[in-house]
Image (cartoon, rainbow, N blue to C red; front, side):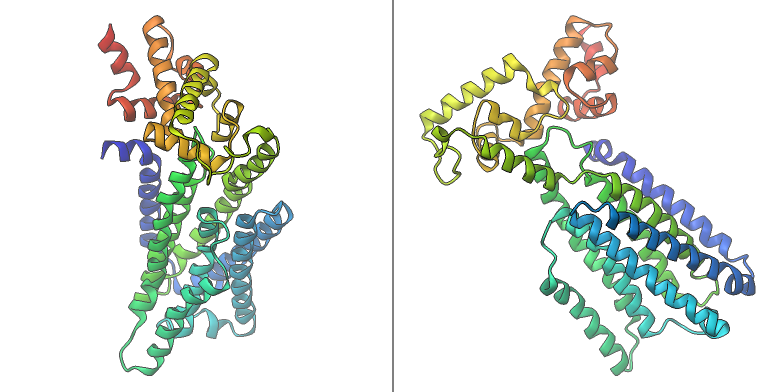
Length: 394
């Protein structure tokens, strides 16, 4: 539990803050007059959503650089923006018919549209976690149950809106199943996860979770302000998400590009070793391990915060797949865990030799990207904070 808090403290606080703000907004919305909401706020919010969506999509497509994650989210923004634009056109033609939110329950069409928009927003994290996984066949299989539920809702005498409203949560739960595998892949290739979007995807999923809660509340209530919280929250979410996605790194893209470049630089004498199907014998493996450990101890490449698995090719000219197998087999841990153990040992030595050195300097000289990462990693590996460990040695 302590390790979970250390790893995801900011995400838990982020969720609590969003829940608090959303709850306050929902409560505050009850005091808005129906006419004010229908005639002023709803058109304003929808216009803001259209502007945020289409402008964000234009920016992401212009700076996509071939990244499918940016393209997927841009398409999601376009779909949402166009749907709200159609809504605005309907309001201009027949404002009372379109904007009277208290006049009826959500229809099957509106429920399905909400599900489709939710599914579109899940395209980005799916592509970020599993590049190339989403295709037309899988998209059809994911949307098929929704089509069946919508058909049954019209045919059967019972109301199936609770099942339809909860369907996006099933897709969101499936998405979380990919996070563990993605984090393992990151730990096998990087020594620092600061710029990897595991945490950003969690924050993005939290925002989708809040949108889903508001969506269910909209389905179950007849208050005229049932869309108030949803509308302003979606606008802010799109602006925040566009900024994050535009400036985040794509680790898959970096590893693939680096893998191709470094593979082309491998010496021909190591062609067999670079083939993961041709593993060296035990004597060769032990020799490689000794060579690797000597290199780590003398050159100390782990002091570079941007140290990556493919940097091992300086001493072990093999492909990325074999390098990952080499670390997992010999040290029973990921590349990330192994490198941070070296960094922690370096930090311990610095604290022992220089007991008055500031933790920020120790973190920097040990290869950690920041004092916060250093403290969190040190506590997770040793069970003590750096200050507690240093005091125990004094």
